[in-house]
Amino acid sequence: MNVNKNRIKLPLMLSFLIFSMLLNSMGVIILQLSEKVSYKGLGVLESFKDIPMAIMSLFCVNLIAKTGNKNALIFSLVFILVSCIALPLVDTFWFFKIWLSIVGVSFALAKISVFSIIKNNFKDAQLSSAISSVDASFMFGIFFVNIGFGTLLTSSYSEYWKFGFWVIAFLSIITLLLLKSVDIDEAQKSEDGKKPGEWKFFLSPKLVYFFIIVFFMVFIEQSFNSWLPSFFKNNLKINSYFALQASAFLALFSFFGRLATSRLILRFHWFKLIMICLFVVFLILGICQVLISYFYSDYKFLLIFIMPMIGLFLAPLFPLYNSEILNKVPKEKTHLLVSIVVIFSSLGSSVGSLYMAIIFYKDASNFYPLFILLPLLIIFGLTFFLNKTPITYDREQQE
Image (cartoon, rainbow, N blue to C red; front, side, top):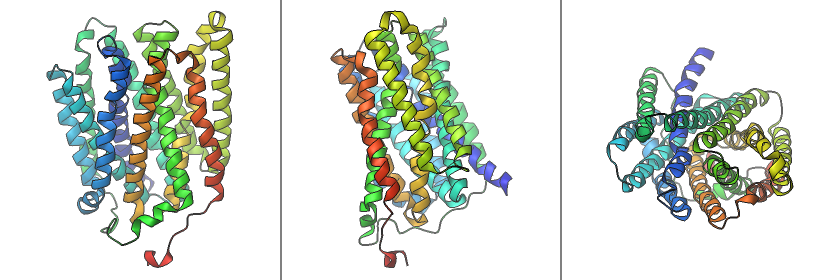
C-alpha cells in the first residue's frame, strides 16, 4: 500500500517541480530584460500568467470533473512540453506574454488536479504530509531553476539561456510516462458548481479567512521568489550570477523547511508549527531591516546569508494552511475549493509583483524586509481566527 502511495506521490512531486521552475523563472526573466524594459513594465508582465490562471480556474472545474484528475494533469503537462520547446525558437518579447499565459492556464489545471488526487488518495496526517512533500518539490524547483539559469548566464553560452527551458520539456516527458503507468483513485463524477447554493459553502468564515491568508501568502512568496535577485543586485551590488545563487539558496532552505514539515505535521498540531514559523520569520526580517538601515556598510555580506534562511520558516506556512482546510472539506467540493485557491493565489501573485515593482521603481527597496513584514502581520492575526472557527455548511446539501 505504501509503495502505491509513493508511486502516486512521485509524478505529483515532479509536476510541481516542473511548474515551480516555470512560474519562478520570472526572477531570471526580470534580470535578463531589466535593461530593456522598465521595472514598471516587468511588474505588469506577471499578470499575463496570473489573469489567465485565475480565469481558467473558474471554468475548468466541470471539465476536470468529466475528464478526471489524471487526464487533466496529463493535458497540462503536454501544453507545457510544447510551449517550452517553442520558447527558444521565437525571439520576440510578445511571445513571453503568450508563453506566460500558457503556463498560467496549465498550472490552474495542474494544481486543481494534483490537490484533488491527494484528497482522493490520502487521509488526515498522511494528506498533510503529502501536501508538504509536493510543496517541498515546488521549492526545490525554484532552487534548480536559479542554479541552472545562473550557471548558464555566466557561461560562454549565456546568449542561449532560453534553451534551458528544453530541460523542463524533457522533465515533462518523464513525468508524463510516470503518470501513464500509475493507477490513481478518482472521485465519483462531481456535480460541482451545479447545485443551487453550492457556492454558499465557501462563504463560511473559516474559508473566507483561509482565502485571505492564501492571497497574502502568495503575495509574500512572490515578493521573495521573483524580486529577491533584483534586491541583491540593486542594493547589495552583486552580479546577476550571485544574485540568482542567493535566491536559489532561499529556495533550498524552503525545500528543507517543507520537507521537515511533512514529517513534523505527523507529530505536532498545525497551529503550533505555524506560530513558531511566523515568530522566526518576524525575527529574521527585523534583523535584516536593522542591518540595512544602521549597519549596512559593515554587515552587508551577512544579508546574503541571513535572508535566504527565511525560507526555512516561511515555506512551511502555505502547505500547513492548505492541509488544514483540505482535511476539513468534503471530497465533492475539492475541485471548487482548489479553483478558488488558484484565483486568490493568482491575485496575490499579480498584486505582490506590482507592489514590489512600485517599491523598486520609487527607489524604496532599502525597506524591502519592512514592506514584506506588513502583510505577514495580517496573516498572523487571521491565523488565530482560522484556528478557532469551525467550517459551517448545510448538512442537507451533503446528503
